[in-house]
Image 1 (tube, rainbow, N blue to C red):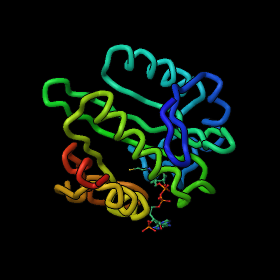
Image 2: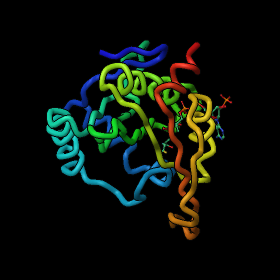
Image 3: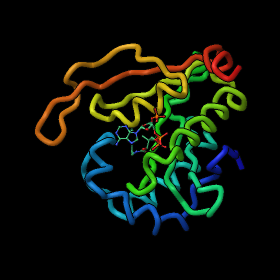
Image 4: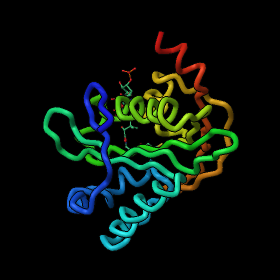
Length: 180
Ligand SMILES: CC(C)(COP(=O)(O)OP(=O)(O)OC[C@H]1O[C@@H](n2cnc3c(N)ncnc32)[C@H](O)[C@@H]1OP(=O)(O)O)[C@@H](O)C(=O)NCCC(=O)NCCS
C-alpha cells in the first residue's frame, strides 16, 4: 500500500497476531507507551478487529509497518481521534522488536503516515504525546519536523518516577516547507 524508503504500511491483519505477541509485552517497550501493563492475545485480536471498524468510521487509521526489503512485520503506526472539523489527529507509533529500533524504520513509517494524513485524509495538523525520557523518539519527531508546543509536567508515572508528557505538533504548511 503506502510505501516509504524502508517500510510499507498496510492494514493490520489477524495473521499479525503471532508477531505482535512476540514483543508486545516487553516491559522495555511498554514503558514508552501509554501503559506498562500487559495485554492478552484476545485483547490484541479485539484491537485488530477494532482498527477495521474505526477506519470504516473515519475515526482512526492504523497500519501495520512491514520492512520493505524482507516484508517482515515491524510494528504499527496510526492516526487517532481524527477531528473532522479542525482537521486534526494524533499520531502514534511502535516498532516492536528492540533490535529494530534506531534503524530509521520508525522515522520512515512516521513520514509515510504523515503523508497519508496530509495528502489523503486532508488533515491540517498532526500532534503527538511523548514522555520526556524517550530521547530516541523526540529526536526522530524533531527530525521529521515536529515542534514541542508544551508539556504536562510530571503527568506520567512509570517505574517509580513522574515524567513530563511532551506535546509536539506539525502543521501541513510546515511539512510542505520541510520537504522543499
Ligand atoms: C521511537 C521510534 C518510533 C523511533 O524510530 P526509529 O526508526 O527507531 O528512529 P531512528 O532510527 O530514526 O532514530 C531517531 C534518532 O534517535 C537516535 N537514537 C537511536 N538510538 C538512540 C538511543 N538509544 N538514545 C538516544 N537516541 C537514539 C538516532 O541516532 C536518531 O538521531 P539522528 O537522526 O540524529 O542520528 C522507535 O524507536 C520505536 O518505536 N521505539 C519503541 C516504542 C516507542 O518509543 N514509541 C514511541 C512512543 S511516543
